[in-house]
Length: 394
Image 1: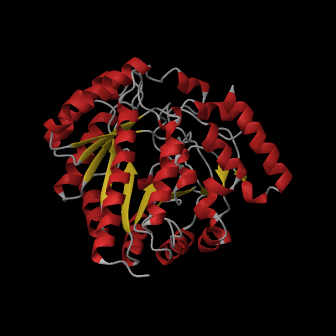
Image 2 (image 1 turned 135 degrees about the vertical axis):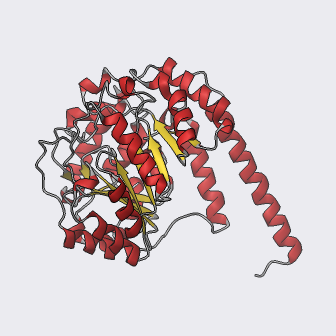
């Protein structure tokens, strides 16, 4: 039955009011708390996303049955010329791990292009240590995929920035953990501050959109406003920070307090419109919490080629050699909803601190081998899901 103009108008009006009601509840819920907002701690999140999904499905605009993820991230190496104590993967100059070859990465890019992936992020480790980096960027661009990269900036000289621009890089994220050397170098090597600043200047000189990542720890979080001031003067596109994710018990010592987070978020809320540089604060577990209600929008691929539904755990959903398109069609798109192990994590994980609880089940990225959940039988999946629920409930 075709809708007349009046009926369509009524339908749109109904949708508008329904959506506005849900959005108002979400905003009130996330801002009306005396503690820093975390998606997993808000009991209304599942209810709201369930309502939103039903509403969107009714009007056929919900992102599901997609041909592929919108974006992907590949850890092109776990080699790194730094040894940052808060690295959630444990990268360092001494790390020796298998990484995908140039040809294997090209094959992955071919598959991602078939799946209509729009953006590819090259991560690590330190991506600039790969000699074929420019070839990878150029190849992805030729396949119609925009390429971003994250880096500590240590190797981005004027010449390197020029080659990045020539290869067609879309944006680069540089780690900058303070507005002065004495702050940033509490946790990074001596000289890292000046190298990062020079990298930012070189990238901007070649008109490469540049983003700064600020890792908030108890040692530097109070310096975030000054770092934003500096980035604004440097004409950085945006500054990003988020809750610190602990993967080891040593990491816990670096975690900011909730009071520090509260002050940070309040400052961002009150001052974000004063700068040309955009300021972003994120919840790293949000994609896990809302996972059962949406298609897998983004996927991560380890340096060895394992497909990771989340970059913070060593749980794999197959390997690139299995065929990404094949895995997508056979359940990867709805892995958070349909796999009992992933669903248990999504349902019981409350904050970024809970990631560390899963260390007892050998699921954290540091010190754990990959566990391919596609290799588990139904009984093993059930046992692991139960153990996850028990661990996250404590």
